Image 1 (cartoon, rainbow, N blue to C red):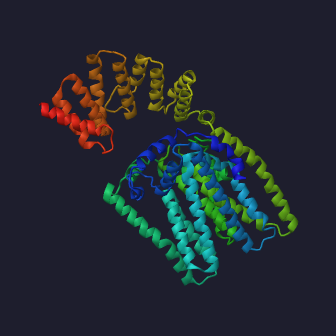
Image 2: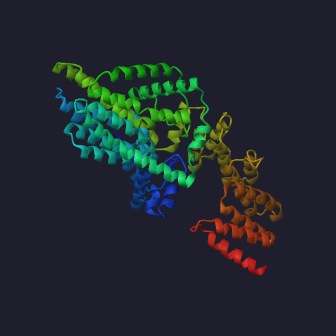
Image 3: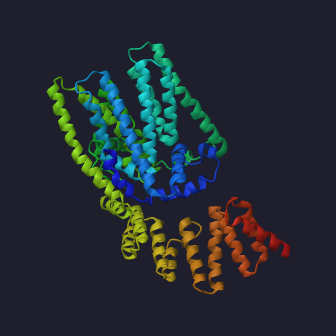
Length: 554
């Protein structure tokens, strides 16, 4: 079912949001040492296992996108199978009627659930698929360990949970989930066994987490990455609660009714606050029940919290996204299906529920297939996103990039022009308009366009400054007098060198000074570039030789 429904995803290309950057990072990662994958970074993200899977793909297939998409599809299929065996385990143990159908239906509903399309179709969405895979393995091992009273299975669950965190750092929320499952599913066991199981499960996370933060603090400082998040937090107490309940209600509704599907969700109706409050009341009601279904549904709702934190902290390119509830959807479906399987006492009642639930598969399959087809092409995906979120200028930029790639400059200019009218217009809109002018050979218009956001080079966007430098380089190539263009280029290179700390611009300054006949300054810039450049930088050797040669001349 998974392979059949997601077959169109094999023909999807590389998405311009994150995927291109990921492929660029892969080229650099392949040059490094294996253990560098696991070293703490200065940024917020820490996903070494995810990057290892991409590196494996890169070694096997290069940049052939179809195989990366196939990897995502197979991971989703693996998650569906894990849902099946986990559901089969808990329903069989309760000796429910028609138990052989409930696990199959549970797995099928998730297999074709439209909410999964973003994670499966987006190559960079693999992080949710991989993290969910190890969380499900961990939960299966936990349930088995509790049922059989085998502590070594709890240890194995810890290993799987660690692998989940190495796939996506936010999977650290599996720690309270594991502790909760141990406590609720072993309620009839002696207290000392429960405490021992909790310690075995929790202690490694605490120890490994402490080691990670010590290494991170030693290399980058105690507040690296997190201080900026805290400093940029702009919600008051009331708004924090408002956003919390609104996002909780929105995501819970998305799990049950995923439509409309949208790649660029930037805001939702405030009325979802009331649904969020209802969800909290539901959790309180479920906590009083001891059924397996209630436990899994509580877990599903709890796992929405990481998505709420993303919305509050504004640490992603969109505050809301369907991929954030891939994992919560798994446990919500498990919980709801288990609850439904226990409701009617008669065989006929069970059959009626099964028939009704089976009918859900038809619209789900149609919707998921249609969404997969939309994801096949960047133009169709971004056009769909603009229709649903017309106020999000970043989508105008992405659609323009896709149109430029297909050579449709006229339509791209129209989309960029619309984006520049929006209040959150990005400098990238101006950069891509400049690209169009350059492609058309209109250097004057290109320079005027990029200068409109580079009037103050000390504060201008760095990518815009780099584009300005490329425009001025084109002026030289087109034959404009060197003495006219050189001062403009020098000023731009100076700002880029100071603000980006990229030694490449010292190298460019050296070339410029050499052409101007200032050998002393040229030698200084070449020396600076040689000393700061990475060892594998293509210009490093040339910078060193030129610095040495000019020094000898002097």
